[in-house]
Amino acid sequence: MTYILSINPGSTSTKIALFNEEVCLFEEVIRHSSNELDQFNHVQDQFAFRKESIEQCLEKKNFDSRKLSAIVGRGGLLPPVKSGAYYVNETMIDRLVNRPIAEHASNLGAVIAYAIAKPLGIPALIYDSVAVDELTAVARVTGLKDITRKSLFHALNSRAVAIDQAQSEGKEYSLVTYIVVHMGGGITLSLHHKGRVIDIISDDEGPFSPERAGRVPTRGLIELCYSEKYSMKEMLKKTRGQGGLKGLLGTTDMQEVEKMALNEHEDAKLFYEAMIYQIAKGIGELSVVVDGQIDKIILTGGIAYSKNITQLIAKKVSFIADVIVMPGENEMKALALGGLRVLRKQEIAHIYSE
Image (cartoon, rainbow, N blue to C red; front, side, top):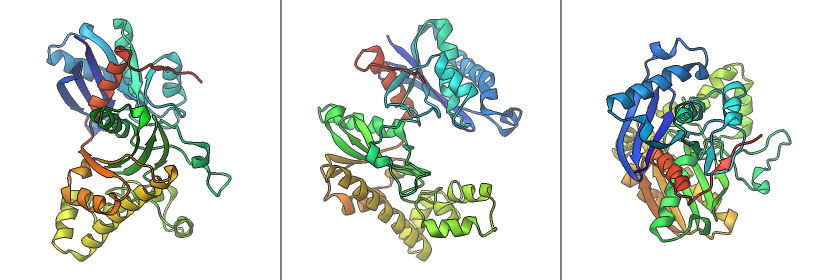
């Protein structure tokens, strides 16, 4: 038996899942109240609290941690890394604890995994960190010398569904070309070409979404920033968290928006159609990177549960390639299967260095 523990820290919860090879034995969401978290000044200060909550959960499930073969944590905000697995080592821990790119709950994934795994003598890994960056040189260029494009997308779930789709076709991920559209609170698109994600559309340069403003006209944005109506903090919130459908309709609930749109609510119908329009436009944008030679288009994330939305997107882009719908966010499984491939020597984990 090969037991793998997946750990995915979020802003107000810590998700864990125990797998025996490909089979999930249980998945648990450990919720943390604001009172519990408010006592900590920084994310890394939550380390001992979150680690203890995981260990207590395993005890309640009557699982002996000594049976574990590996622990895989959600990869945090590191400097750009390759896709796939990395062994957690002291260098990575030092970076995440003492010199993080930014404070983010995912930074705790590697730290907690390492702390639990080390005394057990088993590997701690991260898989498809949010910092995965394999963009080509030409994809990084912008018209401003001060700004280059960075790779920020839903790497974990996007690569997981791409790998899964390739396997279902009896193909190697390294031999296919897919466009993956992750549709959740934020929407990102990624171009998977022969085993690498060579270009992406991040949630601030593409379609608007339930919570994100997406791509907006630069001149208008600059004028709004200097209008003295909003502080920098307020502008950031306006574009991330209060943007998109939240700002336009006052809700992030896609089921509610869809219901209003289908009932001919004038504004809801327009914004609903506009979001679909922009998603399809983004797919077309990425398709030209490889001269239109796309094998499949994959729609994933929570919004992909809507048959109406996926059908409307497919209607616009199926001339490019067949559209596959793989709804949901199977991040815990993606972490575990990534670790399992390393244990089976089907994939070689990278060694983190700076």
